[in-house]
Length: 203
Image: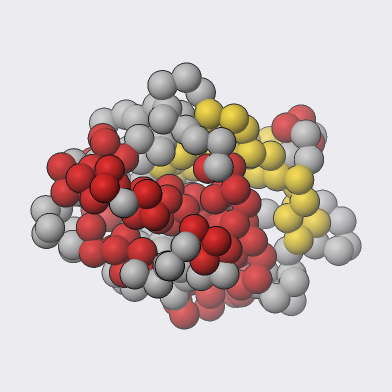
């Protein structure tokens, strides 16, 4: 259970993204969550995991940002579900939407590509599989908000390139869940994550 999976699940961004600028005085930030592409192992309920991840960050900033669903053409934050690729489980890239800087997060929900330890756990436990997908959404959407990687294993923004027990990284969150609905209330953010995002988005 202590296999290092950095080469498999390393999450990346193309440089540091600046903080999102809310689109109006209320702090509104538009978002769009796509359906999964063929072969991605996407499940329709994964869209809810992405929305819960946005809700977690929204709660963390105490109302400084309000995420609002919108059509893709107007969405400042866009979430896509794509097939597994070697070396990456999630990725966030900058985009421009109607002249505003935004971000596209690419989530790869195929847990069978994450090495044998995680693959077996996810196959035998649907909540562990949802844990991985949810925390990856939280991590990538943290990048979309402008947060960098950290070296603190407690943080959801931790970079797996630093090593550590990666199954444990996910399992400590899984242990807080009794049902899938618990994900909506268990944010998975550390004190460090919350302090960092509040510094970017003061109320």
